[in-house]
Amino acid sequence: MSPQHPGQPGASAADILAFPGAAARGGAPSQVGFERAELLRILDLYGRMVAAGEWRDYAMGFTRDCASFAAFRRTAEYPQMRLEKRPALRQRQGMWALFGEQGQVLKRGHDLSGVLAPIERRLVKLVEG
Image 1: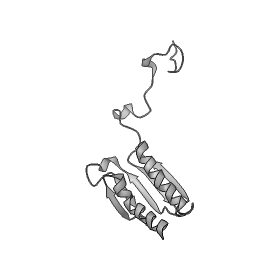
Image 2: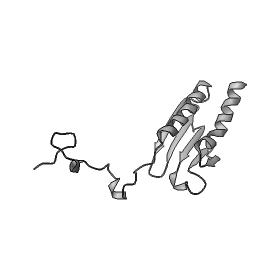
Image 3: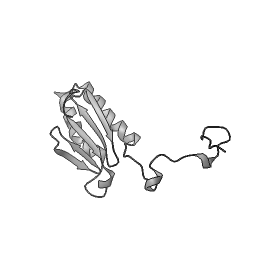
Image 4: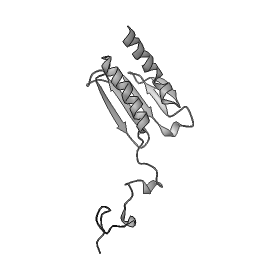
């Protein structure tokens, strides 16, 4: 008897396959990602910086160890800002890190809003003056 796909009539719960890689590591995710609330917060800031004329492009990267968001002034250059989420550092200096244009660490912390504070302050200065 041939195996059926989960969406086919007559398929049972036993026929559902696990996400690739999850079962091999005991159910651990195969890559780190942003939660919906985190991504909304990041994209909200990005949209306000675009409206202020500071950023024009962004990139996101997801690996087994970290998720990153980078914002660019122009497409073909180094990111002006890079934000990383590394859950392995949750119990140490915090899982969030903000990097500057030359790769220097601008801020680390356990809370996303605290790590984004330097960019929020810069945005206020751009809008006011």
